[in-house]
Length: 452
Image 1: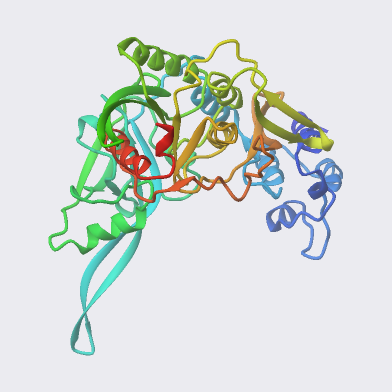
Image 2 (image 1 turned 180 degrees about the vertical axis):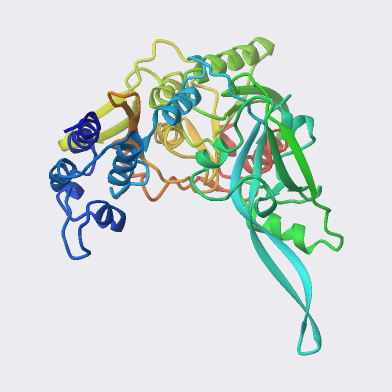
């Protein structure tokens, strides 16, 4: 056996010991790619425990062959979050999770994307009669433009549409894989065909992607598209959280009272999140009292579990349950707050903004704060991930992201597959400053108004 056989068996053993769904490993792996790799027929049963024998009986002569085998093997599992990373891919992933770690010389254009479609209105000749039709094409939606980057300098903005058929990007793969195409060597070029978003659209890109893109097609005068060439450049690590103060008002007992709202936006849970959040809250407190905090977790797909738990501990008193974990081989654990002091005083209410892009650690935070009575959720139903992944390096610096546990809310409400249903359902929430006023107005008209 070669070192490549040993590496493949090392990956196999890791999954056998730590994968959350051990029962699935004892059943047939329904993977045509795995069968083809090992030369098994469609009718043969390939279980996880048979794979070592098949690995030992196969020639593996190159690193690429070994990586391809491990990737196929891991991809055969009934879990879309378990995946294999080559060394370069794993380094990029760790840089996202830990922006304070080693920083390689890589360029970026400063965009965050979402998959969608673009609709085009055209007139066709149907049996001699003019007939209007709508054609749908795959596209990418710009979720966020980082300040002072190449995309920002080119005038791109949130809500603009990238037509992938005529750009050097694709709609295939995960969001992380799509955004990986945006990165490259500093000075390299990226060509994008862009359709500007409707300036007066009432739809939020996060919540009504189809409707807003369709409105582009149905405008009387459709906005012209343009090809923009961006030059990748070295960019500082992106902020994970920030905050601002906004003045709002509410009529109580016939009197209009002014209230100060602290808006906190958390984009990601990484090693910088809590430091940046603490800095934002401290600054807001220094500027004066806050009557309500609005924690915006929309589009936050999670990140470091420890970072999410730290946020909960900054809000929940000592002993308050944060989350219940259920791991491999029946292992269970309940995490409670060990806070000695609170970042946000217990008498200041919290509203959390959520949407279908709120996942993983973000759902953990939202569930913990709601179940404890500290917060209400406003927006749309969350993603429904509810599982925890660990990134484990293999001996050659490649690695496996492995699902090792699932979690429930403090009140034992399952999240995986179902998500969190908000207390106040709002389908079209705007961005940042507009969202604060919009959510505030909705709160004042709801049964939760008494909390403020």
